[in-house]
Image (cartoon, rainbow, N blue to C red; front, side, top):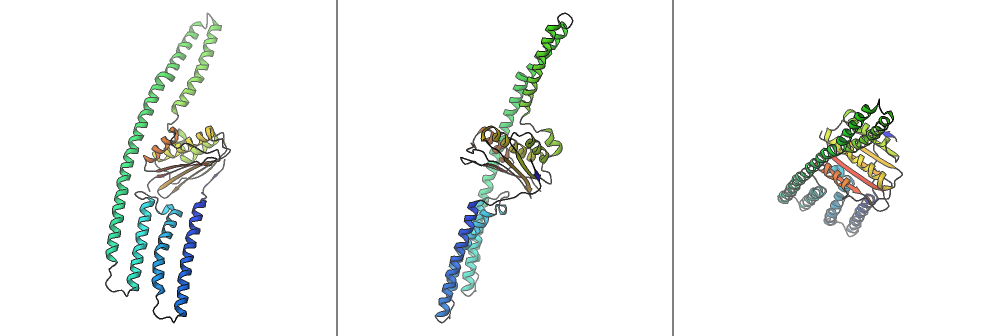
Length: 343
């Protein structure tokens, strides 16, 4: 396992394809304008009519460039109250308004009529934004209600397991040790057998307690923070884990806990199901976002609706975060979470 303090980001092939497509689009448009300008010059110049063609081509090129930029740099729009669709809407509205201003200027100026389309475009963006905020509130309420239900189920499970499992086993241990104490002088062999049975019971009780506390915030996370807790998980993983972490300043407890369990569940799934030989864990705080990524080189085809991953999704979304699982057949499996963590 290695620890570093920076994250490397590799653009997916689809993003490179988008950039190439935009470059071709822009070059073709520029070539058309250049060709028409040459024709204009060879036919005696005069009124520069190619400007209208340039304006017409600017609109689709500008829209294409806006969409490409937003797909290539999600940090421009990944914040509270914003979605990719809303960001594209805002960008396209800006390009359309610039196009109309260009028409106004080329037509000789005068009364600034583009102000009226501008007001209309702003209103449509405002309506879209309000719709996004309303859906976000509804989604948060549903996610938090689901999380509270899960927490209540966990509390009932812990109570039931304590009563029926660990508590009953400890009572049995006490009875065995009491009987061994009574037989210690009269029947040492029977006492020894009872003590041996009690020792085995202690091991079983410890295993039950470990299973029981799974899902509860570990002490190392509370005492030393997320980086140390993730390093401890990596040290105990049966698969080699490479950890890259930069979490400063330290997020609030609920954020740390959610990020910790995203990594813990992902490592457990990789060890049990993925047949992986390597796992990469990347955690960094970027402004108001805590970003977590766990990637294994296993067989893929993970089920994002499974109980474990579904529980992680609910935990992250209850904190207004984003949770995604990409796991094509043949791998790799990539689990990502982005959780707002304030200033």
